[in-house]
Image: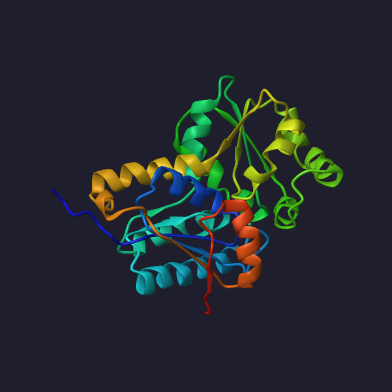
Length: 270
Ligand code: DGL
């Protein structure tokens, strides 16, 4: 019997949002070690030029591979996936998973009326990555996209409901409502924290799809078929959190968003 691969899984995001993916990974793969890097020192990625985000993604990926010896990398950020996933997959010596394809697969599966929506940051929607990923499924669906500038900032301030966020959501989601979609992909790692507000605005009968669970399931099957899974007899996995910004803030807000596994945060410098 194989002894498994004890190396950790590497994950990164511009900040806190990827913790939604980390939560799903920790729940589904409790025996895996995880190293999560939140690039809060350079957050947010959404409004930045894609070339710049691509540079950050390469730098973080190198750091996780060279200093943490990760066996698999998850780009747990839609904007970074849109900017750099293909290049990272081609260049790194380890498997690399993004959040876009898993989310799109779930979206296409969820629809009944073949009208689907994707919302994300300006960078993600503007990149066309979701439009291409939906086209690649060769399904018959009609896609409506909307960028939602401002949503991320509300989440980062811990304001996930209240009048202001509802007013913004009503304005930004109007094209999605008009398109009559029955399934809506939350194409930004922060948006699951706004699920209730988004659902109130688009209607309770619209299925909200989050890529976090789908990405974790994709990792599960990859670890199983590649023989990279950690040996269960080694005990529960360890979780390490790194931030390029203020670590006290990362620990406080991150713990609220992820849960008790986020007990200590180490600082990274570029
Ligand atoms: N993590 C980013 C994403 O999923 C959202 C936050 C940001 O703009 O950096 O697109």
